[in-house]
Image 1 (cartoon, rainbow, N blue to C red):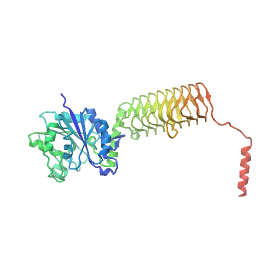
Image 2 (cartoon, rainbow, N blue to C red; image 1 turned 90 degrees about the horizontal axis):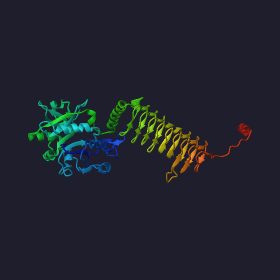
Image 3 (cartoon, helix red, strand yellow; image 1 turned 60 degrees about the vertical axis):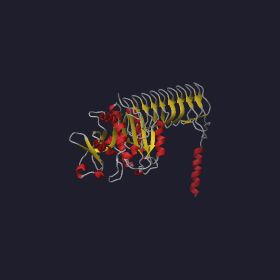
Length: 450
């Protein structure tokens, strides 16, 4: 039977190098905070408990994780990673199972890697601790994972405490561990801080387990999966890596990206097959794109649902609540917010459609605006099936345009238009023969006298 899993996520650091009023772990990658990326992966693993260790900026972190069902405990003093993990002891009192130790600023570790850690903990010989290692291009000041001739871990040593021989080792410590709950807090209680930093190192539990006659093992993963973020530059680097992987996945799954490096996805973007995405398209959170859609260059989409066979852009903006039904078209400099564009309907140029329902086959001319806000409340416009709204018309909501109705160009519509009717709401045009010629001559004569 599979053991229950709990995750302890360390997020107590101040993150001063970010130079931000926002807690470090709440800075976003692909539109979702680093910490929530990690919690999503933990939940995908099927963990029973998530305990987040907080410190500076705890109110921000608690507001982010409590709605997801995660618990928080406080590390009031920063006395090292071992001390931080120990703060979760009371919260996990009575928990019997496996414990993952993770870091809120290391957001891209996958459920699959977490599962490999748990599986290794239940591997041959009943290991006490599983350590996740990686081999960076530049080992630098990372702690080193020292493996014996038998393949078992001998110790993890911090760079500042390592010998020259130990510093030559390229297998580095990510900080991520898996430990049985029955072992974890018993080992943590024996930690000492007689080291160069005067801190309680979590990594010392490997040596403590060895002193008990137990052994630890290490498994490896890609460096990018355990990359941490301590600065804005590192955040940008991790965003870049995440986007590279997401672009590759989109193409593997059947989308065409004309210039992949210019397309930016959100964490939850869903893209169908035979979708073409032209250069410089940005997806915000909450976008679903069905099959055989074309998204033209320089379009921005957020919170939108796009059915099959739709064409969007170029230079279109779809805001939350935009729904484009099958075969509809949104052209250049069109903005849609909280509105449904019906099957085969078109809004091809310079238009704003907000809080609106547009029927199938309707044609929305250039420069049309649904006037949906009076400064206090929002109101809805309804445009019927097959209706035609002429260019530069304003629909002052709440208003309804019936099926098959025509709104003449330049109209300001303030009352409902019945089905099949023509609505014409503009001033009467007058022509005064010769007026322009006389005016021009008069002005030129006046100018000549000056």
